[in-house]
Length: 248
Image (tube, rainbow, N blue to C red; front, side, top):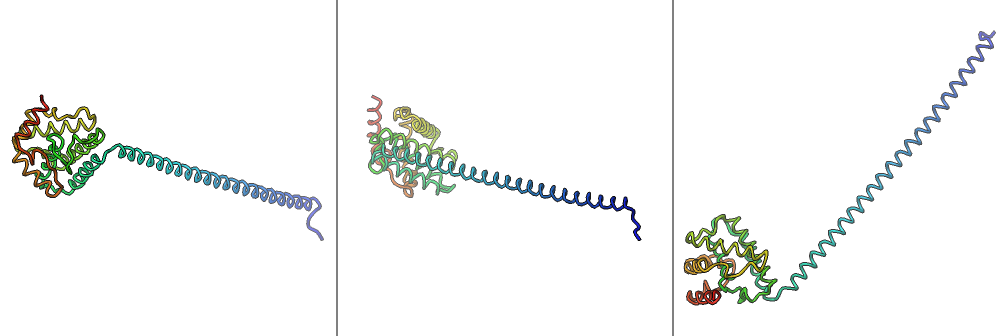
C-alpha cells in the first residue's frame, strides 16, 4: 500500500530534477571559474616573464652603455697620453709617485709636507729640475697636466695638514700662498700661469729663506724622492740674475 499520492510523487521527482540541475549548474560554474583562475594565473605569469625580460634587456643596455663609456674614456685618456712627450710623462710619473706617498705621511710630519710643496715651487718657479727635466722643457699639454697634479698635491697636503704653509715667517707664508694660487689658476687655464706672476717680493722672499727651506726639502724628499733646483743647489745671486732677466 502506497502512502504517497501521484501529486506528491511528481513533486518529489521535480525536486530531484531541480537539485540535479542545480548541482550541474554549480559544477559548470566551478569549471568556468577554474578556467578563469587558470587564465588569470597564466596572464600573471606572462606579465612576470615580460617584466623579467625587460629588466634583463635594461641591464644589458646599461652594461653596454657602461662599456661604451669606459671605452670612450679609455680612448680619451689614451689620446691625451699620446699628446704628452716623453719628458712630460717622466715628470708626471714622478709627481704621481709623490702624490701616492703623501698618503703615508702621518700627522706629525708637517715639515715633510712643507718640503713637498717647496720642491714643487722650486720646480715650477725657480727652474728646478725633476729627473733632469725643467718645467720649461715640457709641452703645453704636459705643463697643464703637471700644474693640475701639483695643485691636487697642494690641496691634499692642505687637507691633511691645515695651515702647513705656516713656515718661517708671515711673509714667507704669503709668498707660498701666492704660488699656490698661481698653480691652481694655471691648472685651469695655462695662460694664467707664469713665473712673473709670483711677483718680485714673493720671489725674493722665498730666496731669502733658501737655507732654512732647504732643511724641509731634504727632510721631505729624503723619503719621497729628489728634486734639484736653483733654490736647493745653485747660488742665490744666480737666481736673482735669472729673475731680473725675466723682469727685463
